[in-house]
Image 1 (spheres, rainbow, N blue to C red):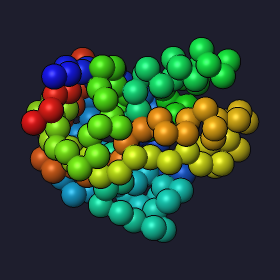
Image 2 (image 1 turned 60 degrees about the vertical axis):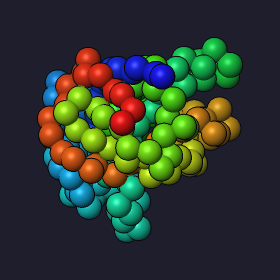
Image 3 (image 1 turned 180 degrees about the vertical axis):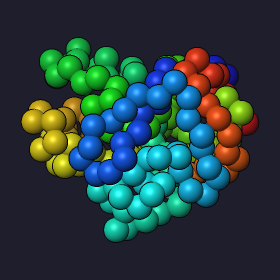
Image 4 (image 1 turned 90 degrees about the vertical axis):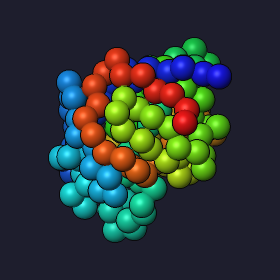
Length: 154
């Protein structure tokens, strides 16, 4: 059994805009994170909406591994993912429901690295992020989340 923690929350108001760190965020079931580009339809992939792309997660362990293995430093906000976790096996949560604080998420599919991130950051991250680029999720039960909230399986 694992027991993880939410480290940080980031949103962007539109595609390519800087990610902003939040002290708390409202997750709206079936929609996304209040104020985020995908909740408002202004994200890079909004032209191809999918219910399992309401919130995205990445493991801080991935960011640490990319720095160690590829020598590329990437901060949480640069990953373009909404939630940064510690101690959560994201790749194992596809098809599973899990709690983040008071909310419930469904792990819809693994996130696939894209050349858009390479272009946006000016760093070759496509290959270092292969098979560990995070998890795209659906919000099953909304609520407010904060850094430090526990993340647990259901």
